[in-house]
Length: 260
Image 1 (cartoon, rainbow, N blue to C red):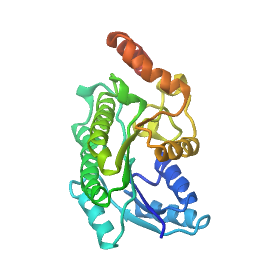
Image 2: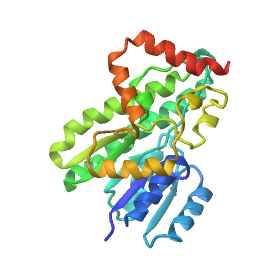
Image 3: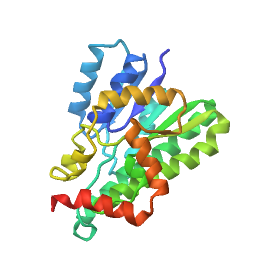
Image 4: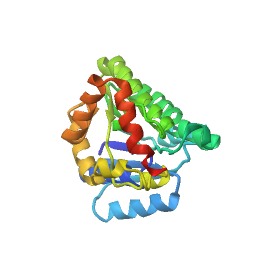
């Protein structure tokens, strides 16, 4: 029987790439997204290449009960998640006081609340089974504060801090909680975050999701607590620790404010 990988935000960018990589390694998939049509299309694409089982479930993680519905569906199907990848998330660009408060709360619900609840729901079963991995998708933003993307950066700081702490708690049970911290990726993130004209995606050249996913798979199997793809991002992590924060803030502000 194949192992099962559950991925949220599975129909685009990193989620889609990870789904294909795990399928190529004979994992069955449980995929969630806000669009059942996109999920079914992705399911068909993957099944044309790999002989695995794929389960799809439409869920909007902005809705408070969505994560419970996901967990209950997995239980109803008598499945066991060997790997949970909390990938769903988005950003919103602008001065904080000008942001739509509904969108701010949606970001917090998806990037933080849903991720936390899904981790809590599935980690109990993993501890009981004495095996399992949870991969929470952070960002290079996890190491910085980000003017004009304040809520996004803050949410990704939470993801890293939370995941590191929980990993230390559950490692003794044979369970790992890892953090994937990608840099800029060709996923369409910049469009939803209103970053089309920002200098950010010119300074940090985006990489392809498939390249990131293949690299991440290897590091996940090696239980790498923090996964950074590329020497540049490893360097930036070091920079975040040794450079005075006011200098880093000025640099990030200059890069991101360029669209105004």
